[in-house]
Image (cartoon, rainbow, N blue to C red):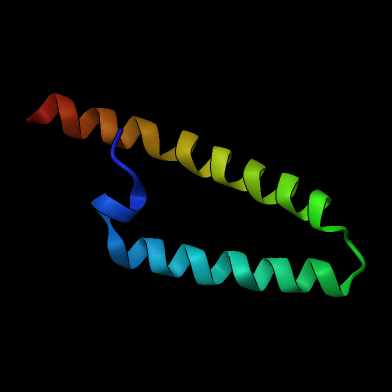
Length: 62
């Protein structure tokens, strides 16, 4: 699967900014960098899982 950065650069920029916002918000609440990293990794995994069915439909349509 292509990366978000390659397939949708605008979405990649939006997600990067959103993740920075989430990082700063969690940091201000006292979360450790390691805990924030785990949480952001989980968000990425969930996002990718939610994208896969749509990508599969697009691949099948081609």
